[in-house]
Length: 118
Image (cartoon, rainbow, N blue to C red; front, side):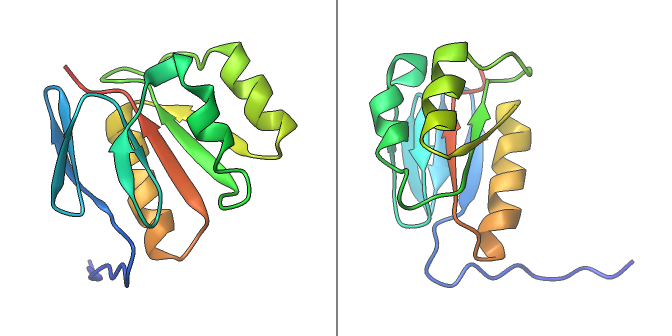
């Protein structure tokens, strides 16, 4: 098996997560988090659609991390982002972290909105 080191250039990958927190580019953020190539900040969860919609010009797809287990994305989020042309992929937060990091390393226009793993 061949392993390849991943390079992120100026992007901020998700370094880790644990009960109630995420570590992004060395910064620890408690609770839900919204990550893009250039920043990471606290996210208001499913009620905070405005923060996701504000990314419309900068991303093509957003990964919604639903916590430790996969769950359905609330329809109001999917509908709002679909209307803006943003693709939505829903998965568990650990899977969303891994997928986000891979696509981020490829220079893709992605974001991740993650609920914590408790």
